[in-house]
Length: 456
Image 1 (tube, one colour):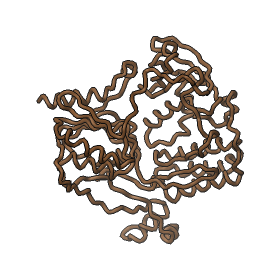
Image 2 (cartoon, helix red, strand yellow):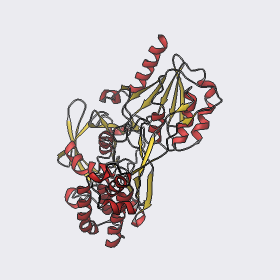
Image 3 (tube, helix red, strand yellow):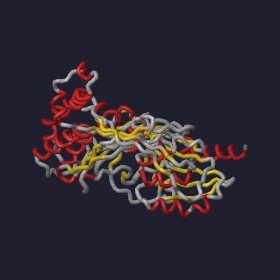
Image 4 (cartoon, one colour):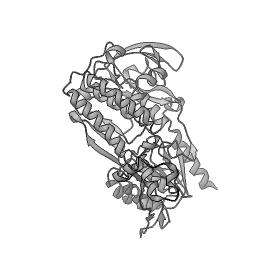
């Protein structure tokens, strides 16, 4: 990502010129976000309030002095990142002054991913595949070791509920910046040779990359593997069309002896869309999903709570509510009702793998909670994204916006998965070797796991 104090940190960077926001606009936007977090953020109890408030106080002075609107929004993102929540974000306005580049550097184009906790180049433009082989590691950026550079100039601007997603995103956005931004990097090739490059963000005209991009994923992808193992990728719950696409495949799916449900690229959408599909994959008449809570503010109780001590809460629900409200810890628990499964259709209850990963998020994680007690289902892959909830959205000055998570979700028994992710039963972590050979290790493991089950 682009750095704040760019004139100092990146002396060759071309700055965005837009500076339309007034000092009053900037202070108002900062204060609006701080206020809405204090009223509505469901995880406020996990925030270091002293640091949160002192940072706000310091920014009242510093943020009006930002030189551009882009820099202002970057500072807002840094402030937001203190909350460590994947459903609480600051979004920049649209327009060229707010559109950072990530992979293109004129003659060079490459994609960086977190592989084995390293910044690994996993794709390059075709003409550079010999100069910068896939599997090369970026070991230094602007004179600093990559890990140190990320910790100082990238991670502080990324909002994430989990450390591993924070690392993924920080690495993938390692060299992000506006057009004209320059980086001096060192790359270690797979055989150990180290080269230095000076890169400038500029559109790359060459279209071909190596390895070539796979065909663009559909909303639902379907294929067969040996031993009548059906593969179904559910790539989003953001479009209810996926439900009809799934039911259209039922005549084929009824022939399956085992199923792989791939949720690794499902960033969420609507919980009801995903749960509709799950109903076909279980014989249960009741399906148990997340429990929900939200903060509840009753102003009079907050006022009374100012004069209520812990000792006053014993045997008094009134005083307890006042005390908790004053301390921003009074919650409303939504009525909990399991989902009724009255589908008249035939079900598909066979050995099933749920492929999951760091990009399995939000409503896709809700799907996993519903599936948690299904004994015929096995989760394979890596921890899920670790963030879901109901965001409250509002506008910020200059065309940007923000969202704040207002709803806490847990397993039915109260176990937390936000901030931790839903864990796989069988963990498969991709290696550099896998990327270099274009091997999908989690899928291979899933097919092998189901094949052995079918052989028993």
